[in-house]
Length: 149
Image (cartoon, rainbow, N blue to C red):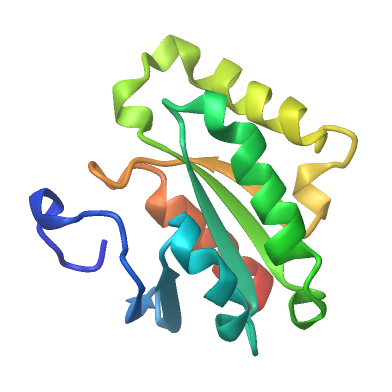
């Protein structure tokens, strides 16, 4: 997505700033690591944030509780993020059989108790993505652009 060789991509340690041009729009992205030791510093990156992209491992659903607790407590309750959009990226779909993808999305939606809200009319979305193959990434960027511009 950012012109990087996918074989060289590893989990973010600290943070990285990238600028991406997509369909004539410039997106400034702050990639902030999710390690426990870095979570106390997340608040330093919330000023002027329009969209939070929260990526979870679609193969490690046993960690959903921890991930969503962090999302709710350390991110979504921040005053500086009021009005920000949320993209929940369920990653590694390239390793999930095609026939199981809809069930995976439904499980995540149900776990978050987000199925009570209509996704199409709200400030959040759940997207199935693959950081390795790039599948679903353009869809995420398109969703952001339609909400922000």
